[in-house]
Length: 117
Length: 107
Image (cartoon, rainbow over the protein chains, first blue to last red):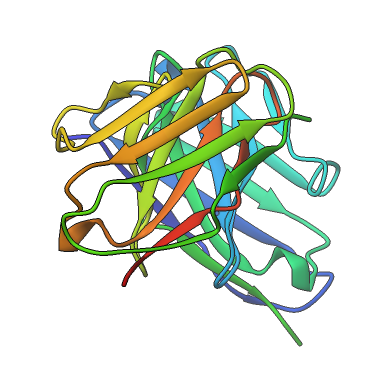
């Protein structure tokens, strides 16, 4: 069965950093594009970043230059390094798999990131 | 960036009703559009991909239509389990974007 499990969320002070992990099972991360989508409490969904099968990366303007997506194939995991965090980054962060036809077919359960002093 | 606007933002309906949620894009996304259902405290679930293709296991009372800039999600014969928030999302070009969501409430 395909599963995505996020970890690494928590409380961080403004200006701080956090690294999220997304560990996949049931498929190889190298074979699919992996995305991050976030959702602030009571708000809508915001696409944030992607790492494609070929290694290319994409970011939303709101996080470009602060967040970095990467992967480690031996751990079958994708990582999301988030720096210079602000209150606007407080959200649940979901790790997603895009199918071979690019639509999001599997979501993780989400990791809560809270930026507060 | 391509923006998606959903209408309405909130929809009140009764069990057994037929409802339609629309999603309009600021430029053509061809048929690279998906619809998701989200319930409180849960991750979204895929309902429709490529504008009109129902994901396996999704009830046939759900249907998607449209292409280019105008899309719709129709739910016929509403069931109690259908009251949730619905999002459209394009995957035509980066950055991908979501509509702002439509909350379907019980009348």
